[in-house]
Structures are given as C-alpha cells and as structure tokens.
Image (cartoon, rainbow, N blue to C red; front, top):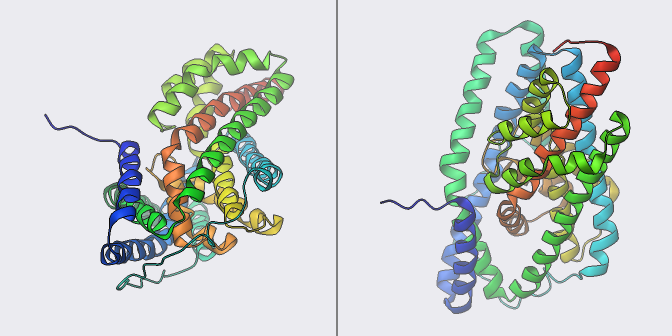
Length: 387
C-alpha cells in the first residue's frame, strides 16, 4: 500500500532535514544545495507574471459576466473586509513586533556558501505590468464578448494551476530544505526559529480578532448575538484548519451559515462567491509574516511600502484560492518589489505560511458567514431577490 504524504508533513520533514544537513555537511554540499535554491528562486520570479495573468484575467471575466446588484454588494463587502484585515494586521505588527523581537536575521551570519552557479531567468514583465495586463484583457473580454480570448484565458488558468500543483508544490520542500540548511550552516537558524514561533502566535491572535470584529459588525447590523453567530460557524472554522481549502469546505460553511438565519438564496450566492473573493485571513497572515520577518531583519515598517504591498496582494490573492500555495507564491515578486525582500527571506516566509495555511483558510471561510449575514440583511431592506 502506497503511503501519500501531504504538503504539511513534507515541509516539516524538509525543515528538520535542512537543519541537520546545515549542521554536519561540508561546504561543497551547501554550495550545491544553494545552486538549486537560487535557480528555483529565479524560476519563481519568472513564473509569477504568468500566475497573475493566468488567474486574475479569467476571474475578472467570470465576475463581469455574472455581475448583479447582490453580487457587486457581496464583492464590495468582501474586498473591504480583506483590506481591513491587511491594515489591521499592519497596525498589530507595528505595535507588537518591535517590542517582542529584535533584528539579527542578516547580521548573525558567520559563514556563507555561495552557489557554484545559478541560472538567471528574468521575468518577461514586472508584477504591476502583469496586473495591468490582466485587468485590460479581463475587462476587454467583458466589453467585447470575446469568446475565443475568454476560452484562451481559462485554458491559461488551467495550465498555471497544473504547473503550480505538479511543479512548484512538489519542489517546494526541497527549496525549503536548501534554505534551512543555509540558515543553519550560517548560524542564523536560532534567531529565525525563535522569531518564527512569535510570528505564528501573533498571526493566530490577529486572525482571531479579525473574526470577532467581522461578526461584531454583522451582529450589530442584523441585531443578532455576534458571539453566538461566531460559535455557530465553529465547525466550518475547524474544517478549514483541517483541509486548508475554502472550496472544499463550502458545504460546511453553507450549512452553518443557514443555521445563523441567513436565507437559502443568499447563502447559496454569497458563500461560493466569497470562497474566491474574500481573503481576510490570508491577507492578515501575509502582512503579519512579511512585517515579522522585516523586523527580524532589523528593518522598519513604512506605511507607504506596506500600503503598496497590501493593495497588490489584495488583487493578486483573489484569483488564487484553491490553487495549492497560489497566494504565497504569486506574491513573491510583490514582497520583493514593495518591501525589498530577498529570495532567502521569502523562502522562509513560504515555509511558515504553508505550515499554517489552514489558519488563513479557516479565517477566510468563517468570515464568509458574517458577510452572508450582512448581505441577507441589506437584500431584505432593499426588498430585492436579485441574484
């Protein structure tokens, strides 16, 4: 019987093996591993524009074709919730991380292991250009009813999704292994490891508060007990932690949302839609992780840079749910462009994010229930049954 190991156990194994290899391996092993690490990092940068165009373009086209009053209301609330989560996480990071962590990520290196070689793969365009292309083509498909181009966009999405699931995700543990080996060998693992634990704890607390705020607002508007409504969504929350997929938990989220008094019609529209456009938990985690590693490197957290990061992530992440590792991989170049992240630092961020990917998913889909409560209330006020 063949035993299938999931991505999370593979990441933990990669982290442990990488640390062990970094402790005992000679320089030539470390430099060889860094050949793979540097080349794979270049490939990630090269592929990011294709991820953005391949995922965002059909998402815009699909949304535009089915646009209606309730749908646009749902998307507006979902996007506002996602932005709130990003800025709230930024505020938490500014207030907490400088107090509980100190710099040292870069300064602690005592040895270096330059790669024997690395293959340079420059991206065909920048992240901002890719986003502009995706919006231009997506809106063009809507306005001109370009069926051939729309079909090509969906086929490109399938290609990108398959590349992520068959190339990037399987190779990701080896990328993490090589990075962890370099951290251990250079003497930086102790500082990074302790910082990672603190970052994870802050991320968990932040996503929990985001949910409390979402349900408090929904409870005030709908005149229902917010804590009771949040407690009703607990089975969906735990399911999200377990399977790390918003799409896979739609039946559970639907069932618990109905128990909160949301109408069948509203729930069946809002929950599947929000599974793709409401990413408050993922956004909060991306900001907390990025800010945490920046403080760990002794850097400041400028509002302008993090505003650029939050706005770009909010657009890119919308197209990534359901794609394994899609959000954190798609945002690699964004972190580099907006925040000046190095490939090494982002590799650790990828490992931490995917190790607790269920946290963001659980927050996303539980918050969908709060949005459904709001939309149901607003639809009732308007006396509309439009879907």
